[in-house]
Amino acid sequence: MMKLLVTWLGGIVVLLTAVSVQANPIQEPLKSHPGCPDLVVQSINTPGWDIATSRSVIKAEIKNIGIGEAEKTLARLMDPYTSQHIGVPHTDVAETPALLPGASATVVFHLPYWPYDPTADFTVTADYKNTLKECKEKNNVKLYNPLN
Image 1: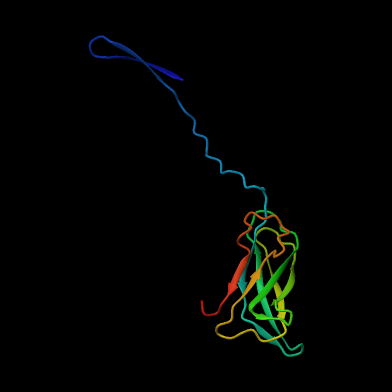
Image 2: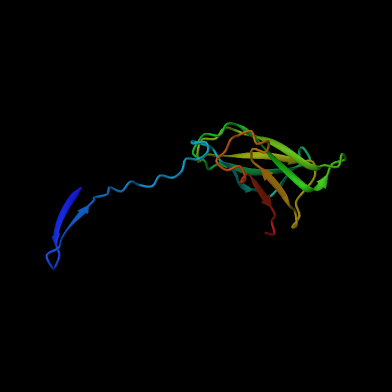
């Protein structure tokens, strides 16, 4: 603290006190779970056909964009416009290995038919069972649509 004595015109003496302030950087609020992983579907490749097994092959890249390690989880591909004989959409599930921050892995899905045409739509969901506590839980789904 520093004191200053200032004489004002007319003989009035005013005592001013100057305070030096040290700035502290503003800290960002802590995430609800520090060191959290965050899985996203980075990309979905155009389907291919496996002649030997007579099924389609769809590959997707799952990436951990969080700051913590992600344990192994399950990813799901869903074709919402086709249904199986039991009336639910065709799906396939593939394991995503544990991923360090910034790492990615390619997961491979299979469908028993050819799903691709210019208007094909399907989704891939990382951590579809929501077993991993992530920084963001609402960024796990990616839509594949070759026209968009």
